[in-house]
Length: 430
Image (cartoon, rainbow, N blue to C red; front, side, top):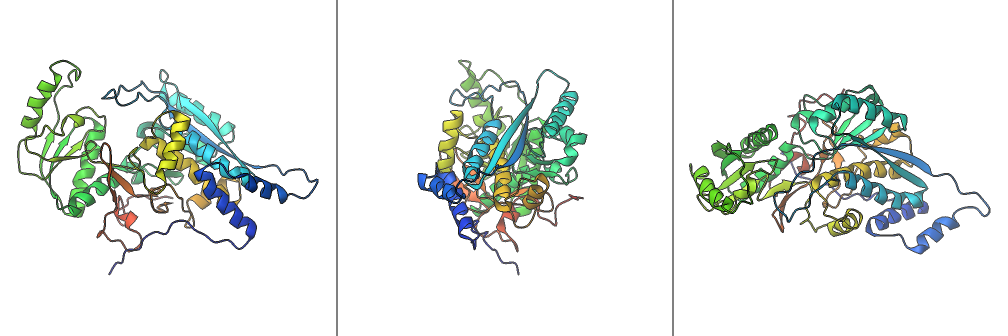
């Protein structure tokens, strides 16, 4: 019989007093600037008249791509042009706050694929340029197609690549790589997190509405898989095929108000689950359905790795630091990039090494854990490189729940009830 075991928060007692001091300073660094006595204590450990030792230097690369600014659905949302990279920058700043007292220095080398160029040529050039600058640990803020192109470059062979954007499940299965880790949740993880909550609430009859884009179809397939896995039933499936009109036209709300009820008529259901990753139509569904039903999925009740409504486990501290740096809220992409950089920093702190190969071995090894303001210690699954992590279930202004839910058991960790368990994985990390 399987028994659930909660993952403990990272807390490794050290024998030496100096190591204890380092651990305390690491915690203080995440809260704010270290007190003056810490610097004085560190300085006092240097022999009188001795020249300060050169800090260990760790280089972290960041590769993103220039994109056409995406017009937000509402004026309440900012138009983001720096998503992802700001999370990496905060990760470097946080890691250097700790590293300063451990005589470590972390630098972020940023590279961007220009928009109006041949992507294959640009990716090859940027990957080689990063390698020439000594990058062996790379945060990849790229969609799946560009990520695969980057991994195919000869320069990627000597790098550990941390995927901070692409949720595609095939990257964790048939298309997995031995040097590829994922800090962004997969679509299956997100769908499983939502399904657990809906089943826990006994809302097991779902109507599914999906968009026409490939990412919408992939999200819809993840929802179907989650329904089978946890005992829910999709009673009807529909495709959103209507042209997107001008939502700010004077008669726009009237058109939508008559369209959505017709679209959502059908078999009796408890929840309307929606797959609209491009945020084109999903926000029009709440409060307009034919029957008074909850909307969940990419809109409504949203499973996500991070949300601005998350306030537990010290998350407000991270929000505050990010807002001070970027002048806006942290997004899921920002958080995934921040986690990727912090994983490198944690490995350097624990190993006291700047060697990229040693850091890579530790990050992918059984002793690695990471605190990320989510209530449990996070670690990478050895079979597919996916970061184990709780998934938030967020409403527009309030955190509703966090999965995994009570009652969903696993023999190792309940975090492995989300996404592909080892027995389900088709990844061969060789």
